[in-house]
Image 1 (tube, rainbow, N blue to C red):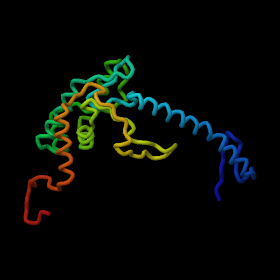
Image 2: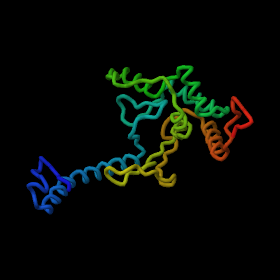
Image 3: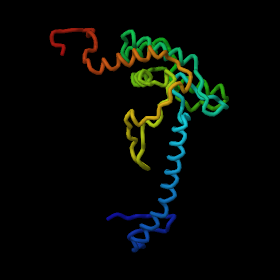
Image 4: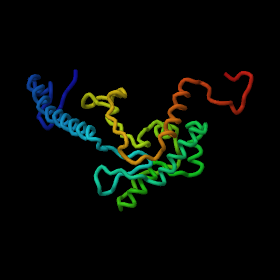
Length: 217
């Protein structure tokens, strides 16, 4: 009960074209170069990852050198914010409280820094919608990211094929390059944050409620 129309291949099935095998052959012919291109792109990306080349946008607090390939520089304004996030977290702040603090004191968000660097390179940044509100997911991503101690961690996800969802790989499958770039956060500070993070996962206590009552919980 399904009608298939492919204008470029002169297919109108089953109204005018009765040969289903011929249609299958046409679809296979069209799919082959797409699949081959996907395979070649995957090989190129894997080779770059194995060499320790950075192939994505730089994380918050860093930016890519405008002219030199694979050179990652520190954005001092962003680096200051990253260090503050770790200090607040290690002092007992939660994700939500940190986000509120950064928003209240108008620390630049990731898009604000991207816009700044695009303006410096005389690129059109009018399409970037810069918000001034921090969210908890961004805080969590920064705290968990060992990129800030100079470690490059590649191949954290894998995609089995075209139109397939990304699959998260185990830590043993990651490609790790220590001291790959200049660190923003001290290793001891980062270690302390990871220890607190692990502790919070095992403890359900989240502090004293602001308005305690006999029925709480």
